[in-house]
Image (tube, rainbow, N blue to C red; front, side, top):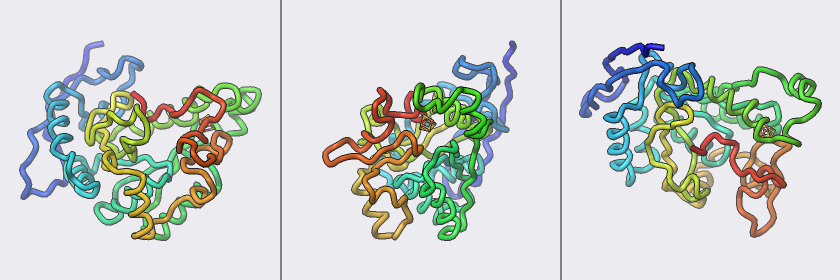
Length: 281
Ligand code: SF4
């Protein structure tokens, strides 16, 4: 299929006193990761944005320049550069809550969404209401195509018991692929010290899996940094963290961890699985 090529002037609400980034050169629609004929992420945006060599080089320079920036400075840069085509997905973890708190001050209009698999803890769902009351921000739930009852009926029972990779794909990844369409950039709450996979995360880079710019304002933060801010600013957090759950995912796939265990040891215990696939490349 011949790729449609279009040029555009980059639109944003950036502060006009700041130097403008060079216009982004565009685009081959359909030139995604080769897994799908459908354009993904920023390739499906209007105007679309594609990872040309020049743009990737620019992101690398931006990322290097932001290495010493505070998370708030990274978020301000991101909003100036990519809003209104900037979004955030959150599972309401402590890092995500920290970014939501920062965005409430910097750009509360930023659209934020959660993947509501149907298997989340009641405590996690309640955080959405708490965020609404505290910040006036309505986190949007994005749902899979089937309810839990429909999904389990179609598969002869809970898929997470036998094939959690498939369950995560059906109820998280495929939903996220749809939700990522049409945005130029999104915020991620990952920290480099969380896992060897995350240790290589740039502050700003191209997310190959979802085909849009991924910004990780907390990449250089530690768990202690996150919890210090939560405590000093009284940021709401999932009460399960006080009950032995350092990392909270879906209820059937999360258990409390014991003293000395890795903070993600309670996720998919019993399976060779440590990530749902959202942040792995
Ligand atoms: S975390 Fe568990 S229940 Fe949730 S989508 Fe993945 S496998 Fe399914």
